[in-house]
Length: 239
Image (cartoon, rainbow, N blue to C red; front, side, top):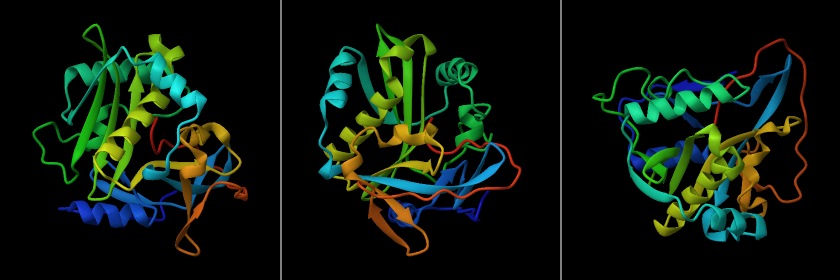
């Protein structure tokens, strides 16, 4: 349920920072915000998240995940739609139990093709095992922040928790690049399916209070639940 949506023709990196700081998220070449999302015939509240990357302290689970996957090669480069990416995403999409975009191109470029000039400065983290692309994490760059857009992986590697691993790699990129914030999308009050976005470090995570227009520490916070309305589930944030 979209609250507001803009259709920028140009978007400077500091303007993306400003949108993200107000609880907005990129969808195709548009950018939108919402306070509620339909889940199982109810409208539940959305809480946009950001991670204060310079305050992140990895615990045992995060360190173990980094160690388990350390032998995969990691490359970060400018994003471009390729057959290899689309084939990997098709494998991933066929394995999930939620409604996801039909393709990478349709979600990021509105189906305009790889020759289209995106208004976003987008990067992709590629994971390879013996040269084979097994996972990809896509994010947008601002001046002081990055926004996680998509994570997807070969379902044969599901036990490796590559979605969470890509979140850690994005945070590491943000730290190394001197960024302040990593925006992974939203969680939903009363619907824990999206709570994996808290995995990197809940104590370094904030959520946006749209009523007060301020960010609040997630640690110890109580997130209320809203209800009612007949609607379907939507895809938003990192997969």
